[in-house]
Amino acid sequence: MVDTEAFIPEAKAEIREAVGDEEAIIALSGGVDSSVAAALTHEAIGDHLTAVYVDTGLMRKGETESIRETFSFMDGLRVVDARDRFLDALAGVTDPEEKRHVIGEQFIREFEREAREANARYLVQGTIYPDRIESEGNIKSHHNVGGLPDAVDFDGIVEPVRDLYKDEVREVARALDLQSVVSERMPFPGPGLAVRVVGEVTREKVAVAREACHVVEEETADHDPWQAFAAVIGKATGVKGDNRVHGWVVSVRSVESRDGMTARAQQLDWETLQRIQSRITGTLDNVSRVVYDVTHKPPATIEYE
Amino acid sequence: MVDTEAFIPEAKAEIREAVGDEEAIIALSGGVDSSVAAALTHEAIGDHLTAVYVDTGLMRKGETESIRETFSFMDGLRVVDARDRFLDALAGVTDPEEKRHVIGEQFIREFEREAREANARYLVQGTIYPDRIESEGNIKSHHNVGGLPDAVDFDGIVEPVRDLYKDEVREVARALDLQSVVSERMPFPGPGLAVRVVGEVTREKVAVAREACHVVEEETADHDPWQAFAAVIGKATGVKGDNRVHGWVVSVRSVESRDGMTARAQQLDWETLQRIQSRITGTLDNVSRVVYDVTHKPPATIEYE
Image (cartoon, rainbow over all chains, first blue to last red; front, side, top):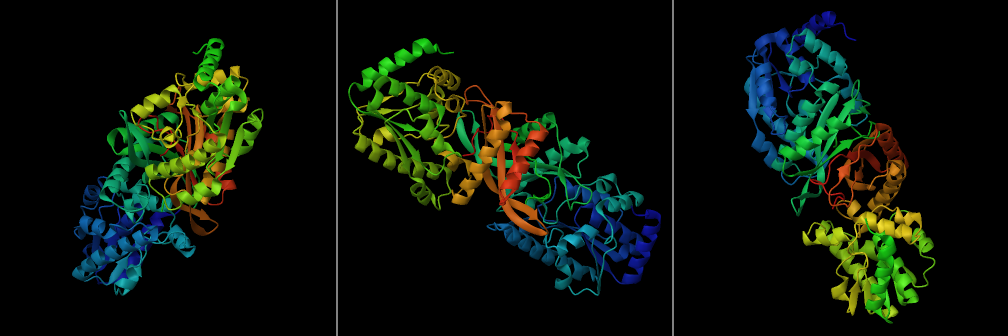
């Protein structure tokens, strides 16, 4: 475990030394990693940091409001409403890698504009240790929004939590007094709900994934999963009244893990599973089926794409 | 419950009266309904019955061998190897209704040829009571191979178990001393594994569904489900060694029901679910994920298409 009392001042000193009197920018994803990197950097260089939160339309329910509230202490917070731009760019794209690519490109476009406006010379990133290991093994491509360094001509990149594991980042979040909504937050992938709808990203599927994720987060909270969410994975037949209908299949995933590199499917009790399925099919008319993912990582990944 | 001692002689008399000295033909699907209809008809009219089993390539593991064995007492048994013809006809077809249509058409072609060769004037069908109700509500189209009456010019149709529920048909099967593999057999849809692979029917997906169904049938046997099977419902990422792979998602379904018209997802214990997932992902290299369907009917159907 990290010694936060030693780590925080060292990280701040390192940031100050790297950035000097220049402007820095960070992309806030809503996840704990970038939140901690932003808070550390804000403590180190104050208003020289611009924190950009891009609302891609692929965020969790209530995410944008939560970001505004959590980071209300930062003058440099910029919330960009890019929902239509992302969803329009994704229309017709079905290949998972192509989806990530489109999202990455659009993100760069949004971020570049903000970086130019902020006159930022340094890029701060919330990369953590497992990200570095996994991107070497090529297991995740752009799970965290990547590719930025090449696109924008920064003088340098600062990664204040690059040597930490996820639970260590959480400890730092608590030590920094970040709201518990951040420090206890489950991991959320960079491309957001786009990787929680298998195949083409449509407004309908994203809306289903968002609401279903919300139900799963609420209903599994007492089981303290490392990560719990729902994904729209396909269509199957259902029955409404006397009629046969075609509805979405929602897969529920709840896993235990230390660092996300391996994970165990969580043994949820039948009552919880039934409450989840009945809330999801009850709230969302276009969902006909809820399944529970019982596969560990490996051989499955945690997310679906 | 049906009084089998009264039912069997009545049914036989009715069949004899309907068919007279003509030839009759029945399509054996491997399911209990058509098996009982065939056995009753064979007892009624003996070698005047031709029982055609078409191996569509969409059958359960070991089905064809089992049919040969179970009906070895019938001289009129015809086993038709039509695997390549069905799978070739299904190439590129993704719409569920279109799949059923292609299967129905191909089946008619195979069956017509056999009917002509047998000089059959009467068609025997294993229609049961819930089939009649559900086809009125249009919930299932061709779940049982239908459409035959129009295509072949028979003098009449005989449906000896048309007023029975599934569990009554099983009772009759036991009274007729049909092998327990038939009387205890779970329902199996007419289009076979084609409706247990969502989307296009390929040899690869059918092979996965067949093996996964076999695992699920074995592992759930002690839980006495009304129906238990596996379906290939899509693709998702997995990880093998250090590499990210794309593999099939297999959904496991095990339900309790009296008649199939409504059903409850069965509460399987975690150990059973884990044994199923580890056998499936362990045996089938191209499967990355196993999920368990926790939805009742309604709002889901039992099958996926």
